[in-house]
Image (cartoon, rainbow, N blue to C red; front, top):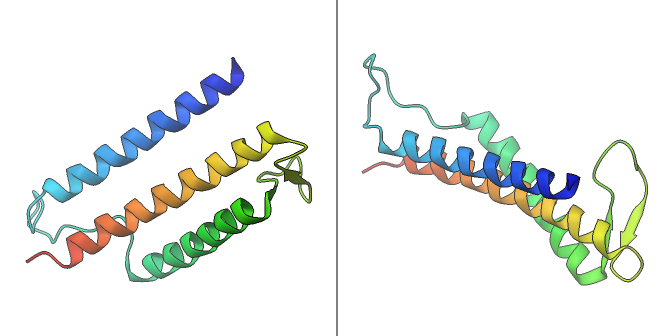
Length: 118
């Protein structure tokens, strides 16, 4: 039950993140106060987000190829889950990493769309 609640909340948070990005994209060039519409991240935040996203994408692809993923979290630091021995924990960590990659990638997408409006 706890795993279902965890995944349902992650999907709900992803949906809220998507709706917030769509709300920003629907805005015009200027907001209600007459200021330019800002993206989700600024220039420095965009570079940091791109770096973290690339690292997580590399970690996810590496985990898929090798069949092992390091634990994501404080409670199990240094532990490695293999697909053969710990399939549930492996896929739970892979889902979390994929969710982070998609969320950060969407933030970069929304920011680029706002910056390069025609």
